[in-house]
Image (cartoon, rainbow, N blue to C red; front, side, top):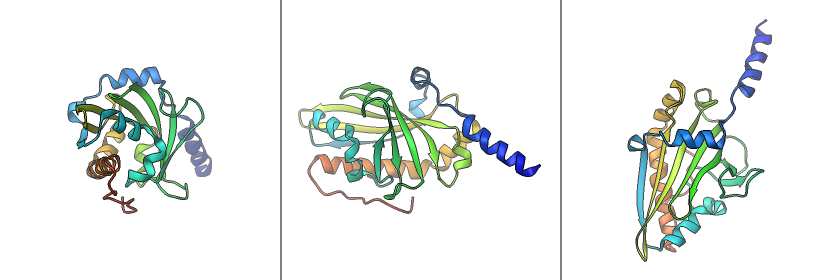
Length: 202
């Protein structure tokens, strides 16, 4: 009996969650309490178009991320477009942990909004199974050679209790990763060596 129940639970967990449509995610995004989000900003000594081009290129992620090894586009919409999906691999070999992302909003050289979901192989995976959070990148030109770039993340108002617990457990590490990644992006765009390397301890 126990074996049958276990198989049923595994089957149910695999198929019970379906990510909402892009349109539904866009509606949820509009109600996110961004004033309470995790957020970090850097000022990059480069024009807006150069910062946008660099941060928009998934192939560059290995150059600046301290948390994931690479980003690989998934089948569907072209990388960088609304509805495009991609997988972020934590380790060089491609084994878990990894997670998926879908772009839900895009205003060139202003904003990119992403939903992160399907967290697989993480320490608290049982908390995050079936959950998703929003991440956005904000771009603002300060002058002809200076750009402000901000990373923010927060959960949906529709998130369940376990998603919120997982979010707050990871709060300190997430903010630290934002700070290091943004510093690396700033240095890369400015043509300087990265400061922070990929870190296996996260």
